[in-house]
Image: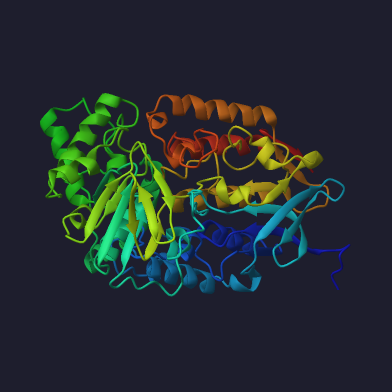
Length: 543
């Protein structure tokens, strides 16, 4: 019987049932270790469990946004669309949970509230929202980098008497906006996906935009079965190319010729450059991330793409004044998450849609009936907050994590998160991050990164074992060197020129710092291999 003095004990506790957490649990179960996974939601899926807003779908091709670790899984699963919608992504996540018998070791509707390192036992003492305390040799925070939604602290937020919705915490049974007057605050990826669908239901839609996004057509369609057969026949080679030959892990076969362009935008003629941009525009999706290799490092090169996309956007909007508001970006393209849409700009041609710019100003307050901008009150029945995420660090900051000598992780991260290889922070032994800070989840294939990090942690646990005295901790010198390397790579990019979640700049009071490694997937894998070389020499290992 478990008592307060002897909490239930596990080899590994995992926090988060997204794709990284599920795969981590699978590897731990294969290794024969005891494991408990805690999930705040009532089911698996991570960000796709919570982001149920209208139009929610992945912006990476379905055949690439899928696990690579099991060949039978790759062959047995068929996607219905080129870009899977949220319900299908949830079906996939549930299929994986059932196929690999993950549910018996999962506990849903349970938040981890604290994780405290106990030096005497060399174990983590973990408390949950259910009042439990459990003990774990290793703790893995698979909390994701886009999992903590954020609503700004608007004046009068609690005064508003209508319906309030956050895109990242959408009601499970959906919302019927038929005949309503609705306000959407924000024009990032979630809003770009939701606005065209909501506009078809409402009597009036007001979109409040602070900073316009760059968005290109998604070109979604039913997945061609001949294309699917071609993909499945060459999956092993495709996955190798994803890992070894692409900067970000994307090589979608719909784009020909070679997907990644490894030359400068100025190494070709203006005609050739335009042809590349046109081909990618017609292909759709996020293929510009694999275009010319200096788009994120050379502002002049970047402007060749930005001006191309702005002109394409103007052609989609009938009112020149509205088009100007939607294309008046004052930051380089790709330095904020590129959006991929279905009829987003065309939606502003509808009579029941009004764009309200709050650039250089603000939403003054919320009132019982609506919201006030530029002294004018907009009365609405519902307000949708598409206000983004406290990205990368937000979910971790909701857990009280204390390491050696009781140091709080947030104190260790004061000014900017610090994590060697994005995997471990000094002073927090046996604690691993997946899809967390200082890795490169922002600009690479999330599935490939998650799988690689999970397999790295799994190898590490295989090396260490579970004996009572075993610990591993990132050396402070290694952590400092990694942060220096991150800064060196990052300072040569244009990322600092945008107030994006990449920089933590979308959250008031959050330190402005680059949160992700920008060296590309292959370089990251090389650095991780160096970190585990010679018996994990970059770590302090006690066996």
